[in-house]
Amino acid sequence: MSTTTPEIRIPADLLPADGRFCCGPSKVRPEAVAALAAEADEYLGTSHRKPTVQFMVSRLRNAVAEMFALPDGYEVLLGNGGTTAFWDALSFGAIDDRSHHLVFGEFSGKFAEVTRSAPHLGEPSTAKAEPGSAPALAAVAGADAYCLTHNETSTGVAVTPSRPEGADEGALVLVDATSAAGGLRFDAADTDVYYFAPQKCFASDGGLWLAACSPAAIERIERIAASDRWAPASLDLGIALENSRKDQTYNTPALATIFLAVQQAEWVNQNGGLGFAAGRCAESARTVYEWADAAEHATPFVTDPDLRSQVVATIDLVDDVDATLVAAVLRANGILDTESYRKLGRNQLRFALFPAIDAADVAALTQCVDHVVAELRSA
Ligand SMILES: *Cc1c(COP(=O)(O)O)cnc(C)c1O
Image: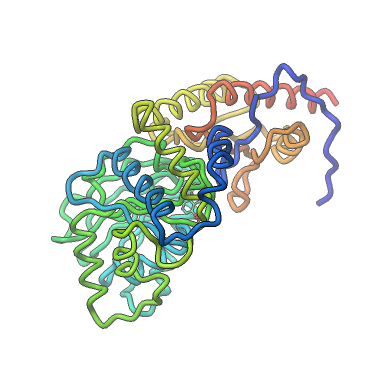
């Protein structure tokens, strides 16, 4: 398909101050980048086994614990490979035999596929829902791990993590919070492993995973690590636990990623914590959904307002307006990455509403969309 992008210039006074609306990697605050540049000479290019970097890792682990108000005994683990590698790590080191998955989009589906194809695990069960909605969480006899996604980035559906009533004794709740962590409220006591990568709400870069683990999860990790189940060392959660406790990773991490994540987490904590971050996202969400509800040419894709994500907005456009063209015109005007999730295949725009993004910029974005739609129609 070769459509040329129409020459539409958005008036400068409509444009957002910052044009980054990607759902990951997402906008990094300029203040964080400046802080990195200021400390680069003593930090970048130094050993991750020495105090300077270890102190940065400890700041990150502490800031995450503070932001999530982790109950006593919870520990923050980290390692390399991002969320996708962490799914493999969970399959080796946190699931005993059978997992149960809520599947309602691309990412939740991928994790279910990881456990389904793992030869050392039993057949997982799944509860599925169509994109744009979410399945109910119900206990399944024999399941030792419940796998939920706090925010389905591919569809813009968010659910509240919870423990299934009547689950087997000792079953763990594993929450993929990659695009939710640091932007949506939750109760850590309702989760055993709340994991994410920092290129979304944490306004950093990719390649790292972080996981807030309950005492029950730590016990499970230690028991499996001591068993005769084989795990590749880079995905071994027992090894990750040992290294995390020393404020290190098993192999070399990206130092800039850790630094930028600390900047974001401490910025959030200094301004009031998770409530502050979630409040910023909620304001952006109100702006975008009120606009889409009112606009003749736009509709929120997620019909149930309770499921509408406050960190990722998915907005359908009417048939006579090609969302691909709108996103291309926005891109040509410096407003980036508003395309919908490729595999969803809808006439849709998708915007990140992460805490680093200003609600005023989201408001400006909606006006830019209105402008582009009007211009395309009058062409
Ligand atoms: C982005 C994302 C992932 C993938 O993260 P990587 O760090 O790229 O592996 C997984 N799950 C969710 C919910 C995501 O938003």
